[in-house]
Length: 275
Length: 347
Image 1 (cartoon, each protein chain N blue to C red):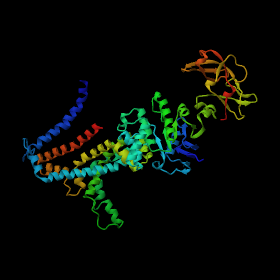
Image 2: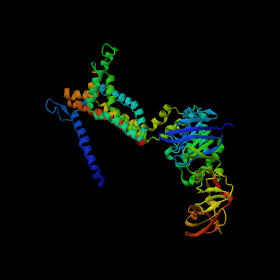
Image 3: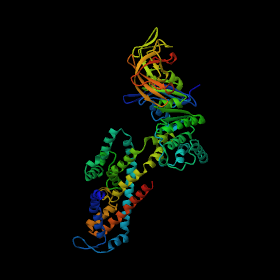
């Protein structure tokens, strides 16, 4: 009874902010489009999902979003491992400072950071300006609105989500394990590959998912920094909702993405349970 | 003959702390050597320098007469057993033992035979497929030993090898360690803070204090003949009595006694072991003292008496059970000891 009381706020929160919105989303996905306001009529129609299945455009949008998200998550892991290792090995007092530095970008608004990148990368931006003044280039380099710029923005935005779980995992790792590996003849990279990485694999998977999942639905960075042809699912969702105003198709797409992203989480949980 | 390992004036600082202060040491082939000291004595730092995890700020480290100061840990023919054992949690016991052989590129068939032999040697034959978390503390310790010994090191470092074991397991494991050392012929260098462990296991003991070797020698020699007040107190908790050398012998005002014996002129204090003092009928002449029993603690095979001497010093006296019931608290006693039991301390 007391347990139920203690859990009540959590269940209430989940019901109000997770279950209810998801229910509304599914209801809209099954509705029929309508010219009125709201732009749908409740029904039991598979029309929204039918549109998704019929047009390969949607599948491509999902796949390219997953590709960009996976690339972002991999790059984040690659950068976050050395950062997290350095922080975990630092003296406790310096550790706090370094962690604060990792979190520092969060103190600035998200859009402001994207705006700063745009200011740096655009044709009349700082980087091109410096290159021209040094006489290294004549025409501005196309930096912004490229896949590289998009990935840069994504990695910058999501890096802390990768550093924190890895740091927590590495902190629990007995430093003697790495020393034991080196003592037994492993060079530092071999020791990392055979001991540090496998021993912190759950933290690495958590870090990957914490970046991958929000990155898969990311809309702002591809829109503001990515190439125009990058039709990622987040952008397509936005267009369906606000430009085509086809809410059932947009909702169906959101539901499909949600189901697709729950899969890796379930896999991770299975893997954790087996250990 | 060149020693297997030679440390020459090794110095190491951590910030403002001097961990090792121009330390010299030589360890022979096939020797069981103990580095004994309290916390902050530098014993663990020295072990980590030998393994290659720390670099000395000054001094040379020679293995077979060759300077290995710049050799990284993975290239040193030295292996270490860690205090936490440091078994790889994501690998089976056999994979743990195989780790070093794989790095060395040992052929599969040979590796498997060596792994089986190493596990057999530590009494864990048939445990190869277990995971470290399925093992008891004693079994983990054996896996760690097997993982090091399978590399056939000429020098094995052991960081508090018995430290994490239950008291009843320690004695047995200690004997097993010695047997393994004889069997493999490797030199074992063990770090410990427990003087009983060091005395029981090692062929030679180096007593470390403040980053220097206070005394080095076979266990019996350094136990019987401590060279300094520190050594006398650390090893077996001897009584140390201050005084000065005179024509009659060594006069200690705080003991209210004169010590006669083979005492060189430079003697600044004397050490007297609790078990070398007996209760006498009367206190007459040198090597006797009078006091009052302040407390008695029964220890099984003997009782420890705290005796306040007439000069004011407190003396620890071990009273053997076969000598009958010990005097009670408040009893006035006369004490006597043999001249041969008096150890002169020069510092």
